[in-house]
Length: 304
Image (cartoon, rainbow, N blue to C red; front, side, top):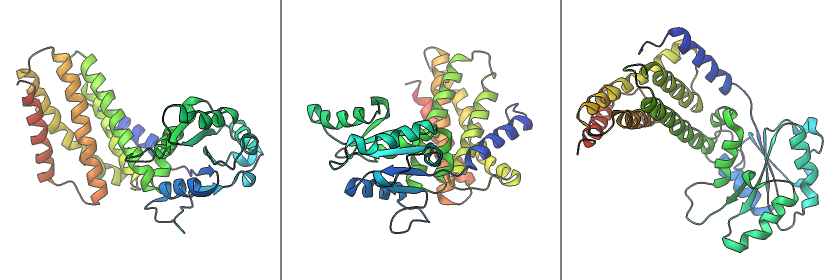
């Protein structure tokens, strides 16, 4: 596998399994419609949802949130949702408890434009949450909840565990994993000048990505199953071969072409792996040929 040792692949497998094996819950603190809507957004499609809310999502009013760090530490991320009936003093102790426990506190404010934002932004400042941890939710025409995306970002690697339970989070996690891996491989392709030297690093990144996508879909990552899953990565070798052919006909600096190949090839492989797990069926040779053909046409496009 592109000079990548089994030992390195097993190390990546261990890392992904560790990230996916934890038990993670998210807490929402608020009141009324905004609280109910975000709880429903996070829980959408969850198999364990009862009355529309998953067991992985706790929705509490400010008075019910524990002010003791030892108890607040059960949640890695706590989202404080603005409501006109909630004063800063109602949630300040809770924000302090979350931070004392090493958790992440974010503020979820209603979408507003221009100066209309100021009252909401002031509330976030008064409860001690800075701009970087503030999300404006409910933007008209938005395709997905901004709060869901912000919670995923705050969870970091722990989001992989939550993605197994919450499909709403899963899509955000998988999209982010594919995009970040594609960017990394684009940089590797552009900066590694020795012929073939980029392959092991790019392949390991792709192995990690595919296993991460598998874990997000609740796949068992035992050794045998992981080997079966990694057969999906084989699609990537056809893509890279097409990309290397494109380098010989593309005008301009080859490092730029390699960077584009690294990015686009990894994106294509990630999307193929995502489709594989969503369908719950093997990635067929015919589908691999279609992906390779698509990428081959992309490579030829560099010459036009």
